[in-house]
Each structure stands twice: as structure tokens, then as C-alpha cells.
Image (tube, rainbow, N blue to C red; front, side):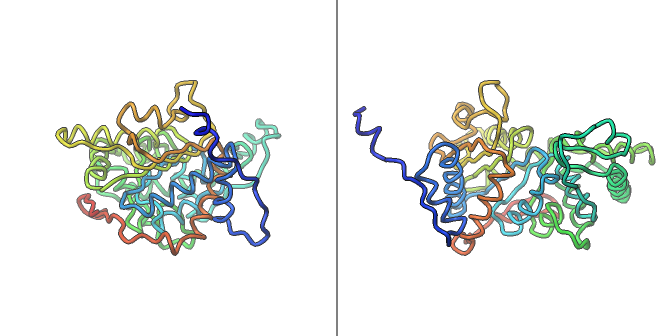
Length: 343
């Protein structure tokens, strides 16, 4: 390779403009270096995915709702900047908690945690919550479950029904927005959360267990891949949501072994994890190509940045460009009966 091929594109000093929109700031950040350029590339790839005929899947890990990201994710759902969500039970519990009118509170990590325990205040780094209010949300979910028909549910079906139950609340969040927009939410590790604790209380109160059919919903996700012209993935953090979305390409290839799937066409991740420890949260998209999860020709970027910094900036940029990014077609899902996707 000739020397000039490495030095064709100079960096561009960022020029300050007092009247800049967030989108224009991100556009100008393409010329700088380090994670600023990665953030700009994430914005560019998200815009490309929205202009393309593909289904966009969002994975959300970490304590994003207590950290104040709840209405951002609801905005993405309401405006169909994403088409399907996979997240943790914790985020969904906290989302239900705030929809019921409860709050999380600004705190500090520099505090005596033993004293917080005595006061029944729970801490998530610099954020506090009242334990007695969490228990009220536990009871709400347990009471909701007791009103359902006693049979197995996919987490998608359970969460859709919970979103419908919460729809009359003045606070709108992830669950209510997804239910109203017809966007499926999946939670593969739902028992690993206060939702699981609430359903354990339901078992004690009623003597009946609550069963989730997580295998059927894995096939539902594979069906999304099979019926979509292409797929894009956006990961906030990593963890179980990332792996669950990544493996849908593998599942789909087993369901239709004679069909060659390209892998995810667009891929974005905001994470603070790094790859050398071997964990999935820091795993590169380049590694994912070896599994067939990511297309060999994918537009992909990992932005090593706290999601509470990256997400407000990038989504504000999308909002600036909302009119020109309005999609001609979005996938539609049947969520009230048997699951179906209409590309």
C-alpha cells in the first residue's frame, strides 16, 4: 500500500458556531479524532439505517432508566427510530416504577451506605430510590400477573399487556410507548430483576407459578430477521440484550438452513467495556463477523463512551433531522394475537 493512501484525509479542527444544531455539531465531529469521531460515525450509521429498508433492533443494558434515559428511549419508540427492543428486567421495572408516578433521586456515591440501608434507601451509583416505593411497584406487578390467564407467556406478550394496563397513567415510558406504537419488547432475563421478585411474591400469594416461554420468543426474533430486507442493531451497553439480538441471525439460519443470511447490516454500540477481557459487552463487531452475526460489509462502530453522554447527543441529532429521516415504511407487528411481522 502506498504511503499517500494513509494520509489522504486530514483531521479538521472543530469550528465553534453559536447557532449550531446538535446534528450539525455531530456532522462536524466527523473530522476530529478519538471517541468524538466515533460518536459522529454512530450518528451517521443510525441515519443510514433509517434511510435503508431494514428493521432496527435496540438492546438496552445498564441502569438506563434510573439514570434518566427513559424518555429518550420512549422517544425512539414513538418516532420509530427503532422497531424492536430487547432490554433487562431492571430497566423495565424502573420504567413501570416511574410510570406509576414514583421517582429516582439525585444522590452521591460519597455516602454511608449502611445508613442508607437503615433508612431503606437504595443506591445506584449516584442515584437513590425509596425501597418502600419499590415494594409498591412489586405489588402492582404481582397484582397485574394475578389478573392474567394462567398459562405460559412470552416476555413480549407479558410486557405488551403490562404496557396496555399502564396506558391510562399520565407518565409515558418505554412500556406504554411500545404498547401504543406496536413495538415488541423482549426481556430474556426477566427473572433477574424486581419483576422476577414480584412474580415470586405472586407465587407465594397464589400458590401458582408464572411461566415464561422464552424459546418461542427466540423464534419470533428469528422470524423478524427472516422477514426483514435487512437488520440494524444499536446497543446501549452490552450484556444479555446484546447477545440475544446477536444470536437471532444464528437462530434464523437454523430455521431456514438453505437461506444465506447476510448478518446485521448496520451496527452501533455505546459501551465503556473493552474487548481484551473476553466478555460480550466489550466484544467488537469485527469478532461478531466470525460468527456470521454481523455482515462482512456492515457499517459498524463502537463508541467507547458512557451512554448517558452519548445517547442524549445522538438522539437529539436524530430529532434535528426527524423530517428528512422519516421512513417510508416501517415493519408492523401483530402483538395482540399470534405474533406476526409485516415488513
